Amino acid sequence: MRIVVVGDVILDVDLTGTATRLSPDAPVPVVDVANIRRRAGGAGLVARMLVQDGWPVTLVTVLADDDAGRQLEAALAGVRLVAGPSASPTPVKTRVRAGTHPVVRFDQGCGGVPVPEVTPAMLRAVEKAGAVIVADYGRGLAANPRLRELLAGLADDVPVVWDPHPSGALPVAGVSVVTPNLAEAHQAAGSRASGLFGSAADGAAEVAGILLDEWRSRAVLVTTGERGALLLRDRDRTPRPVPAPRVEAGDPCGAGDRLAASLAVHLLGGRDLEDASVLAVHEAADFLAAGGVGSLPDPPAHGRPRHRTAEPLLLARRVRENGGTVVATGGCFDLLHAGHVRSLTAARELGDCLIVCLNSDDSVRRLKGDQRPIMNQQDRAELLAALECVDAVLIFEEDTPEAALDRLRPDIWVKGGDYKGARLPEAELVESWGGRCVTVPYQPARSTTVLADALAKVS
Figure 1 (tube, rainbow, N blue to C red):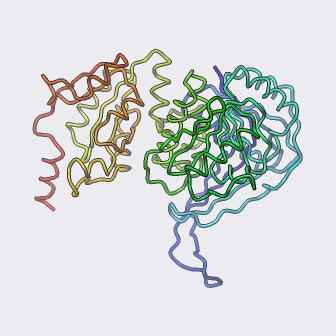
Figure 2: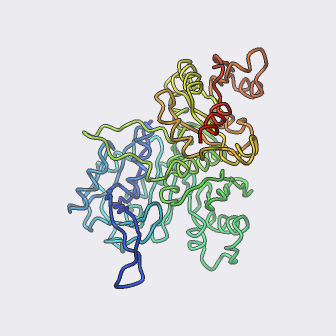
């Protein structure tokens, strides 16, 4: 069934370069811009994420007839677009970065605007939704009365995820979940909150309860940055923390959009909201670990979306829904060698996708000592993902892959043939959901330790 993204679109412009000197006019860095990238932001970013993951998506929005609007429409190539006219200029957010570090952002046309009209085609597109994401970026579309009436009626029948904005409209009553971050939640609660802003757990629980009463939604999921999120449901009012895996990420831009997109996918698939929230928080962390918005490919030529594999859990779900077999394997892969490639190739031949569960840097250090890993987790993940036989990489923090496997639930779990004749440690877990464990041929005289020792002798 089709996911419909409803909301405001923004043209995001990224200026990236290097900063090696200060301006002679003022003590500010001079950025020598090497790359300019224009991409769809706001509701457009949510839609692009879902299209890159292979989901059928319709974006319902309004577009201005100006140069920025035409650039934005080009950035939405490959997205099924149902757009009405906008009487306001296209909002543009320009970010300047020196390497991966933000320097400044300046906004154009992002102030208050009149509520736009909706067309019959826009309403018909929303009516056909199997799930709805409202990405409100304060540009007025979510305040349109006709659209709000339609969304309120749909909320009884389909999952509706509402991503609010401080200057946007209140969510309509009855939506499945509203997803403010902690700052947005405190701002929305205002003076009714006691001011427990410094305590993520207590502060999030308090404001979630206030907003649940005000918004009359079925649930509120308050995101709390690197600590994850807190879920409060109207049916039992029990705060449920949702911890996030620790990731190394410089720019959190797009994490909230990734969270909302993942929630809609899992609710559409029949997951309980608590399970969907856990998966969505982890997928938002995976998104940031993979490079965030910087990892999203440019719009495809001729409007044809390219396959992207940054979200392994979504990939696994899509393969299963198409009747395919999900294969997973795991390890540190500290120095990628021929033995790894042969084993991975053999594993990929067992099914329709291969997902590698990769030990994080901290996990490798605990298992192999302070001198390891030789390469950091992002480099290891990038090398693995570059192999034709690998479809996605899932980084996990624990010493064993059981928690990652429980999230992924592969049909086949593969290990090297050095386990031959012995029951795999993960066998009981994998068999609990009907999966099976398989060993592939072991490659003698090829190992990371042997390779590292050889390199040490010639260094």
